[in-house]
Amino acid sequence: MQRVKKVPLRRCVGCQEMFPKRELIRVVLTPEGEIHLDATGKRNGRGAYLCQKQACLQLARKRKSLERSLKTSIPEPLYDDLAERLKEAGASS
Image (tube, rainbow, N blue to C red):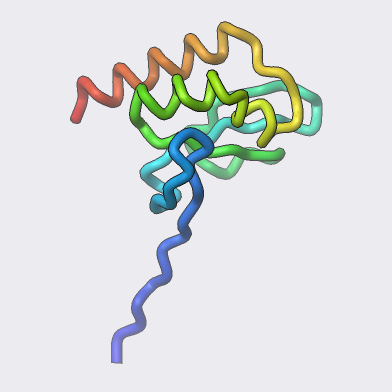
């Protein structure tokens, strides 16, 4: 009998929908207080997830839900970097 592997689900801070972890972009607050985009999903620190839709990023920015999830303020360049990464993801799909 073959075992079915459980797929970890995470909630998007923008649209509040559940998605498989691999489909989301992770933003992580490291113990040093730096904020990074985590492509591997394994970086040490507090993480928040966004789905790869431009509308979700705008919604998270407007509601400050990403800032609330990470419990810190987010600099504008990081939002710009996220927006750029979403455009690249959209162009490749």
